[in-house]
Image (cartoon, rainbow over all chains, first blue to last red; front, side, top):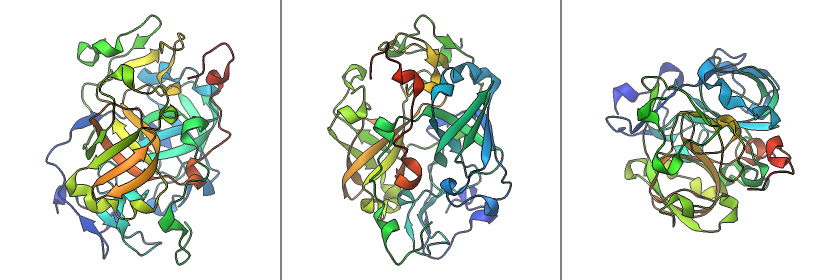
Length: 174
Length: 174
């Protein structure tokens, strides 16, 4: 395991988990285009499921990108991509504490993944200059924002989608 | 406009479009974790709407990350994030040729955005080792893969979401 990519104290490795060596250097770079303001300053306080929280959060877009918000206010819902910069990136098998069974990183929504890009579908309440008020987030206050996209029901909504491992009766619902 | 971030020949700037200076250096790095194999080798051949195509595409995950696919096969649908490395990153207002009206980058799903991370919801057909067969992509052959996530209808599906500008009657459907 590459210590530089090792777990932080909040994300210790658990029995059954597996880490890999990551490449020596990244393939491309991302810009933080703003910050997400939420009520949660510690990981333990974040909602386990974003739909379980009706907290209004604020998305602050950096001034240079403010013109890119034109017509965003016509969207009822948005996809937000943000950077989970406190998570380790080298775990391929993980044992989430609330399940206790190891699963592949790509079958989980854990912030620990090679590219710690989180995705949330949020309801847009209002736009005020370069600030958006939204509902549906579960991240820490100050989380760096990567992208805002309009949510198109025609391509993004699959009401009957199934995550098989999550349906099994011997496991807790999230 | 920073020439280093300027449009490539396939993505020329159009009347009404606006570019900004991007930061001098990125804030974080991403790893390409695999490649997407599609039938399309030129941008003009890519489907305008991924749901309009039933082409089976292949997601090739790099060997080091193969263990991270454990239990992915139990998912009916996945979210794929990939890197649109041929798009300019400095456009904040864009005039898509099929609409002809400038809009903010964050109200569009255009690949041209500060962080050119595209998102597609795909139907998973099968998993064979480190290769996934999926339906629902619209990207060029060889596109770098960033992430695979399970699609949870409970948080990701919003059937009644509306993109207001797209509904206006004086504009073409996608």
